[in-house]
Length: 68
Image (cartoon, rainbow, N blue to C red; front, side, top):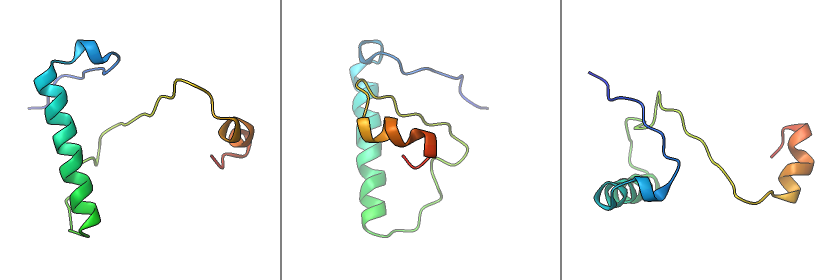
């Protein structure tokens, strides 16, 4: 059974315990990557997005070339 889709739009909407768990999991994933441990691709099939508050001039100018 899959979990319901949730949107992460505001830090204030995420319970502190859940946010700490997310951060702890990300630290563990990064440690495995740095240790060159073989993983099962824990984010396979997931949709991730990065949202930036301020525009990046190099990215904005090269976005037309898709090289950002």
